[in-house]
Image (tube, rainbow, N blue to C red; front, side, top):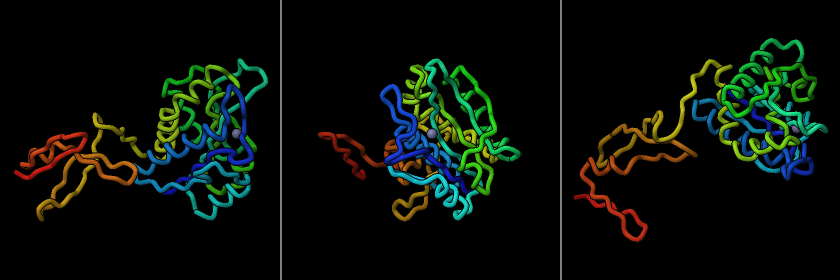
Length: 235
Ligand code: ZN
C-alpha cells in the first residue's frame, strides 16, 4: 500500500496568507507528520515535497501516477475574504466513488478530533491534482487561515491535525490506528544482548529504536547518571 501525500504550494507560491501565517508553511509539517504516522502502520509514503520548494500542479499528479500510489491526499488551508468563514472541508473528484469514500473518511476523522466546531462537509472539486491523478484522491482544506480561531488551530495543533489526517486515511484503508507514545501501544524491538535474542517493548520512531533503561536494570546492569551522562555498568 502506498500513499502520496501532497503538501500544497511551496517555494515561490506561499498559498493563502493571513494572520501572519503562510499556507505552504502550515501544510508541509502536517504532511510530514501524517506521513510518519502512516509509515508506523507499514504503509509506504511518498511526498510531493519535503522542503519549501515549488512543485507544479500537474507534476504532483504525474509523480503520484508514476509512483503507482494507491491513494493521493492533498493538504491545504482555506482562505476567504469574509474572516468569519471557518471550518474544515474535503474535496473529491466529481463522480469518483472511491474518492468520495476517502474524502468522507478524512473529513470525519478531523471532525472527530474535536479541534473544529464547524463541519463544512465533503464537496466535489475540479482541482488539477484530483483531475490528473489515477488513484482515489482527496483534497482537504484544514480550516481557514483567514479566520483567527482557525489560524490558531493551524498554527498550534499541527500534530493533532496530522494524526487526524493519517487516521482518516488509515480508516479508508481499513487499518486500525495504533496510538503512539509511552502510555500506548509499544513496538516490539528485537535486540541481541550477550549473544541472546530478546524481544522487548520499546518505541520505534524516526528510524531509531528506543528501549527503556529499566529493562537493562532488570538484566543486571547498573544504571546511573553523572553530569548529564548515563552510566551503564554490568554488575
Ligand atoms: Zn491551497
